[in-house]
Every structure is written in structure tokens, then in C-alpha cells.
Image (tube, rainbow, N blue to C red; front, side):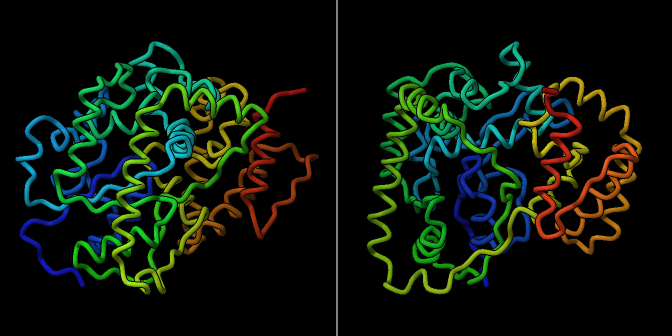
Length: 349
């Protein structure tokens, strides 16, 4: 039970750090809300035009923030920076509005690989830029004084810290420091549906990331050390019984229900060899795809795995030749989806 709070805590949700799971857990709300005073995230400056997206966390870390936010409680969770950026890259590449935003800012296509993404200024020091209130994909560098002020602010205000890698401990720390009680079984939100495997070039990507993101890496260590200090104050049984439910198939339903009219094939972007041709194909078949989506939703009883099995049957009937035999893995239809995506849209060797 969450009692009314005249000054509810501010949750600072750095994208792809488990922030949706956290805000739902500590607020008792059933879904993520739009960014506001107590929920700092990213938002479109003008949702009708979608030409600029910003973080609304910046005033906390700007000059004067230490006075303006005295007496407010804040929660900040960070994630290993390269893992977070990789998750962000995979998440955004499936979403047309973000690819278009990237092109508008950089005058280039959204990078085709994570390695290329890492090498861009728009993906450099992204956690630090978010906390400073920068625009999404802002390529301008962070000044040393800005970063120093940000780190100082972590000790000037009443922060509760957490790490994505230890979400049970993060929830327990929030309960202890915020004086709340969360459900023991918590729903995991925005679960990744598919993560492309890392290639042989991962050590080179990791090395480039380390060179290009020293501030994000230092910031992560600053938060990690403070989280560990706070965790040492928790009762021995603080995390006992805390568990999370929900997986890829739960995330899939949210993915396909988006107003962006995404289709399951887009989950496996790495196998779509010609992105422009795929966009044209999708537009050409939009009515058939919408019908498949609606009919699959009607029969799935809000179960992602059932939805995908039904959708795959319809997709195979619609887009494969009669002579082509395609079997769907009933236990894990995401595997079958990857095979069908490769078959229809992959490179022809």
C-alpha cells in the first residue's frame, strides 16, 4: 500500500536501465506515465511534430539544483554503460520515429551496426548527457565543470541509488530509504524481446567504447559505490522473497501494440538486409499485416507466445510459396520468427 505523499520521490529514469519496472514497483501504478516532475525521463518537445526529444532531468543537476531540490527525495538507477548503450541501440533501431530523429540531427542513416553507433558523437557519454538534460542524440561534448557538478549533486541531495544488475537489491534499498512496501512478486517491464548475439569484433567495440565514454564509466562507478554503501545499511533479509515475472513474450505484445504499427519481422532487424526495401514492402502490405495483427490479438487471450504462433501461421500462409514448407516451434516461436525473417528479408548468398 502506498500512502499519499505531499512530496513524492522523484524517479530519474535513464533509458534502458529498468526504470519502467522500478517506477511501477515503487509507485504502485500499473504502467509507465509521461515524464513529469516526479518522473524524469525523455519526452518529445512537441509530440505532434516529433522533431526534438529531450531529457527533463537537467534542472536537478544544473547550477542552483542543490537548493531547488533540497528536501526532495530522488531515486537514480544506473546500468553498466556499454550494456545500456547496446540495449538502447537495439531498442531504437526498431522504431521509425527514432531513426528519423537520428537522420534529422546527424544527416546520416541510423548506424547499421552497434560498433558504428559507438563511434558516433551522438552516442557518446549518453548517460551523462541525459542527466544534464541534453537532447536525445546531442553530439556536443560534456564540459568538465558540468560533469563535476553532476557528481557533487549526488551527495548534495537525498538520493536513493540502485543498479540494474541488482534489481532485487535496488527495490529493497528503495523500500528501506523511501519508507514504502512493494509487492514481493514484481512485473518486469519492457523486457528485451531479442538481443542480437555479439560478434567476434566485440573486444574492439568494447575498447572503442572505453576510450569514448570515460565520464559515463566514471559516473557508473560513482553510483555503484554509493549504492553499495547504502546496501550495507539494509537488514540481512531485505531482499528475501523479491522476485520478478515477465519475459520476452510479455514484451512482444507491447511491441506489436505500438501506435508505430510495428510487425514481428522488425524484431530481427539484423537480418533485414535492405531496410529501405523492407519499409516499402511493409507499406505495400500494410492492410494484410494489420488484419493479421488484429486476428492474432483476438485469439491470443493476451498471451504473447500464442499471439506469435497465430501470427506466424498467417504470415507463412500469406508470404511463402505453396511449395515452401515452414514449421513453427510451438514452444519458442521467436526462433521460428528469426528463421522466417532471414528467409524473406535476409541477404541472398
